[in-house]
Image (tube, rainbow, N blue to C red; front, side, top):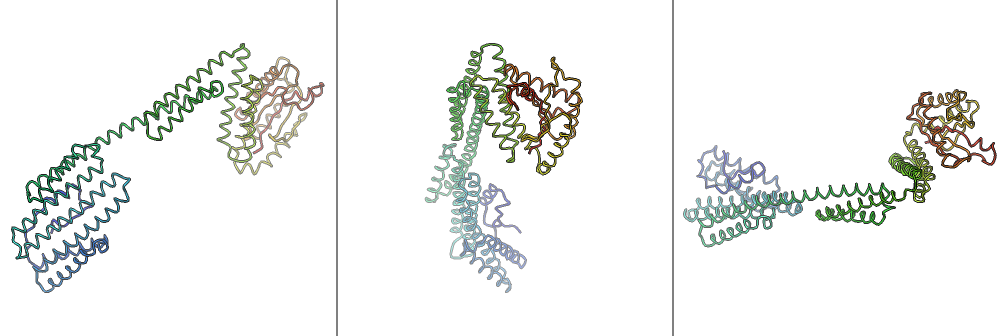
Length: 557
């Protein structure tokens, strides 16, 4: 058996509940029999149980206590088979229990709303639940008044009807107040001002008409107020969504502009604009920083404008650098070595970045720091136009960065075995006749201290067996990287010596890979010219020692 006072806020849509409540009428008196009375008492018990689960005894103690007492009386009347009295007490029990439940939910909703002020949608739905609970309580009270009026011979049916009519109007006014509050939460005074004001005006008219007992006008005005408030909600949400969409569009535009500016600034930095066009570069950097600040503060238009300005400044800085570089060309040979130096330094920077990302253990920190120092010196050499020195220092950066990466790539287990590996490689290397093998900080160095090239730059045939022996040693330990270093004495210019040693280092690398089958992935080469002598260059004996090829097997971790 279903009655209008059986509510389920959670499972029934809110708009349907409001419509259902506002359209309720007084039910006719139920048929007085044992089965009906039993059903009423069962429903009353369930209503008390629902209220108890919500802790109504704490939030609405009076109504809850009344409900319990009325249920006891209903049970007593039922036991005595005084059916009509049992039904009446059961009905009043159910009404009081539902009022207690409504007040409890109202109190809880107010608390949750207070705790959730920063979340507009949560406030919206909490307010909806809150006001529905109040409306239900008012409707239940109105039904209670009507029921008591019909049961009490002292009140005429006309008076009872007026009371119910006023309660219905109060319910309509309450509904209008709900919708106006929800419209306010959705910021209707800003986004739907006219409809919001109309709703408020009609609500005031409804209240005034109720005071003046003009019930027709009161109910009409309340209904119009509700409709205007609901329309205000829809319009406010639509306008707010449109505004948010526009903000999102501006935000995306600002992000794209800032990314482009950052790319332009990076290009300017890579072109060394921070040195050759410092004033313009610094201005670009400052403008882009200001753009980020504006973005963080929500001023996306300003962020976009500043980002565009920063991008333009960065591009100008790059253009200035290119112009200055072009103007500084002295001759084709100088430009060639300068371009080579810039390229090697750029590669050194990339190697240093790779080393930074790879280095994870302390054993490689010293090499990384050495590479950093060498890179700074290489950049300084570029500024000083000492391009040969810049190339040599940049090659040291690459070497130390690669060495740091090699050390970082070796896992803990391999590190534990490093001492044994060093011992085995050194023993095998020392078995190679006519060569000098020793352990250094870099690793195992196998040195050829006699000339292996013909005057035309080819590898002598009688040296090939020695190179094969060295290749066999390298292939025996495939996990270890090998750097082929070529050194000269100080005869000739340093530029010529660096080129000669670099060319010969590359030739040995190609021979070891293509002829002896050593994996090229494990090989790298570098020419130091006469920068790293091991003996004096004042006599032929010393110069002969300095003309050497070192095969450096990297085994240090």
